[in-house]
Image (tube, rainbow, N blue to C red; front, side, top):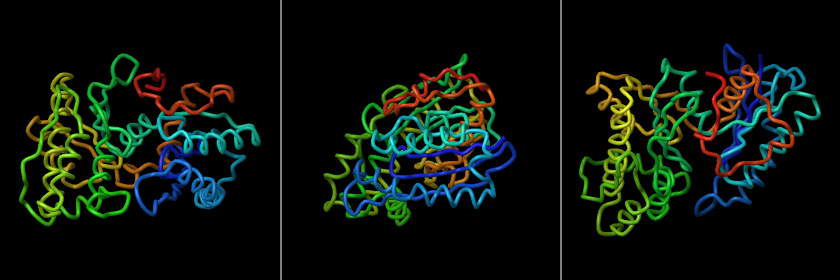
Length: 324
């Protein structure tokens, strides 16, 4: 079975093709704003401009013609509405033109499924941290359950906000990591963990107010140490509650080496195992959408044209899981 997947939830347009045995193609293009964060209309325009190129490149890389595919999957949500529209339009057009089954998948669950595909994790407690989402997710009784999440902005968003105030372009996470690696010094910031949940808006604001009074590298390191400790503490609490012996770290922020180190240390103390997808599958990508679509297609799930509209606020705990 070969399935094409289209990712267009935010700044990345991705087109991937997977089989049951391997990832055959994984093409992507990222919208890079000249200033500020992601502008929805400009990001959507970027996706439209690069869609045909990525589709052609994916076909050539996979050595498969579109009409020979078994399914067309697309990220139906959650995400930026204007960007979601692009992927949905492309997927519907390909599905109708070539009479290929259409599968609208949840972007968050695709991050988890590509994580288990590319690691040895079987039923992990997942810490999913990205620019748009920050959640702790467990699989229970036919549904993925969100057992902890941010109460305001996502961790990746907070990193981007701090980086912009320091004068760095989007995405800001890699710049904050680079700065943090220059020092071991930290200053005290708030520690916003609230049971199983966490909060980053106030922490980001507090850090921004210290710009000019604290060296940039010290501020970056302080923000990382506080924010990542918060998420790992909540992850550990969730694992303890579920007696989980596996942790999966995924999403764009999962590429951060300091966060990975913290998760590894916590799991070692709990005699548990920590799993990290390869970096290219932590970032938003088409292959993860294709893989999730393949799982659902094999389980008999398809999406009609009438039900294929975007779902900007689609939570992973709203999806009935029929493929496990």
